[in-house]
Image 1 (cartoon, helix red, strand yellow):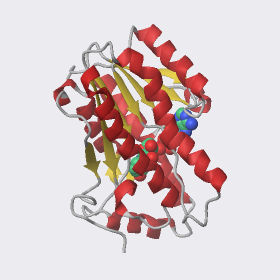
Image 2 (tube, rainbow, N blue to C red; image 1 turned 30 degrees about the vertical axis):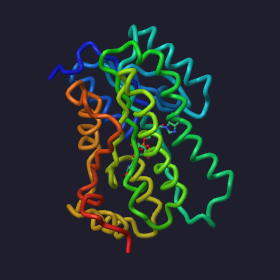
Image 3 (cartoon, rainbow, N blue to C red; image 1 turned 135 degrees about the vertical axis):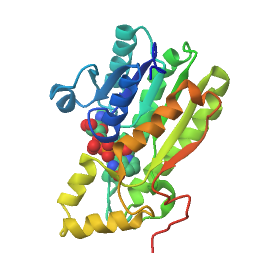
Image 4 (cartoon, protein in one colour; image 1 turned 120 degrees about the horizontal axis):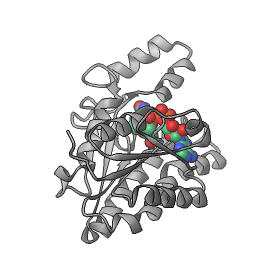
Length: 252
Ligand code: NAD
C-alpha cells in the first residue's frame, strides 16, 4: 500500500515499542518518517528508511529545533504521532509532587510542545493529522495508576480540545487508547515484578480477549486515524484494548 506516499510523518518515541511499530508501518505504506526520540535512542541507530532526529519532549527548544529540521529535510510535515510517554505506578500518596511534575511534563506537556511546534507546518498540508497515544488507563480506574491515569486523562481531553480548535484549519486530531501492549516498557515492568509470570498472567487475564495487545495492532489503528481515509474523523478515541473499554471491564 502506498496511501501515505508524498506525506511526511513525525513519530515521537519512535525508537521503541508502539512508536517503532507505527514508524515502520507508515514507512512501509509510503510515508517519509522522522523519528523523534531521546539522544540515547537515536544514537543507538535506526533501521532504514527511518530518519532519526534527537529531541527531548520536555525541552521546548529541542522540540522546536527538531521539528524545524524535519520540515526542512522533508519539505514540510503532514502527520504528527504524539507517542512519547513514560509510566508511573502508585496511589496519590505514593508519588511526591516532583514525580507528578516529571510525568506530566513528558506525557502531557510533551505532546503540547510537539503539536505547537508542528502546527505551522500542518496548516500547509492538505492531509494534516495528529494522533495522540492515550491509554485505557484514562478511563478504566486501574489500581495504583493515579498519576499515569491523570496524565492520560489529560491527553484525552487535550485531544478533544485540539480537535475543536483546529478543525477549520484542516488539522484532524484523534487518539488511540491501547490496553496493555507487548513493548519493552511492559517487559521492564514484568522484569521488576516479584513474580513476572504471575504478573503477566494477571495482565493477560485483565483483557477480555485474554492476551496482551501487540504493538502492530496499535500501529494499525494509529495509521488509520493518520491516513487520508479518516478525512472526516476528528476528536475521537479508538480503543485497542481487547474489549476492556467497550465491554466495560473495570478493576475489581
Ligand atoms: P517504550 O518505553 O517502549 O517507548 C517509549 C519511547 O518514548 C522510547 O523510545 C523513549 O526513548 C521515548 N521517550 C521517553 N521519554 C521521552 C522524552 N522525554 N522525549 C522523547 N522521547 C521520549 O513505551 P511504549 O510501551 O511503546 O509506549 C509508547 C506510548 O504508548 C506511551 O505514551 C505510553 O503511555 C503509551 N501506552 C503504552 C501502553 C503499554 O502497555 N505499553 C499502553 C497504553 C499506552
